[in-house]
Image (cartoon, rainbow, N blue to C red; front, side, top):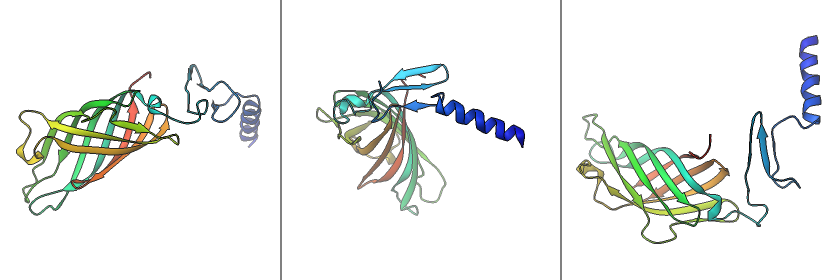
Length: 189
């Protein structure tokens, strides 16, 4: 019991002295995030009045799952996938995508679809002052992709919310299905 009280007292003193994790969002500080030996600086949008396309920059890995319109005895087919998204900070995003989909007629066979992602106009992603945003992309299937993947180009639009400097929550929905996931930055650690 004394040990628990001693640990609680040390934690309280440490937090009061500023020894904990701190992120200066909305505070009159320099915007530094620190924990242990790692320390970095991130502009969360407060200094310029909100987020912008420059708030999403670099390479992100998107992992997603959902359902697409299936065929045969599986009218709502499960889909999982990975994408590498390259945001330029000026409103343009490109990348690659690979999905695994259970498009079957009862055989239990899955279909792998992959290809390149690109916009049809520039800019092809926007970020609102509140950190929400959207991207308009098309998937051009790689040579040799299963015919069940569809015909290129395939619309691949999504919405996102900036959770932190390194993470986006992402969701997409159109006439082909619906999905959601998260994108983590490959920049830094």
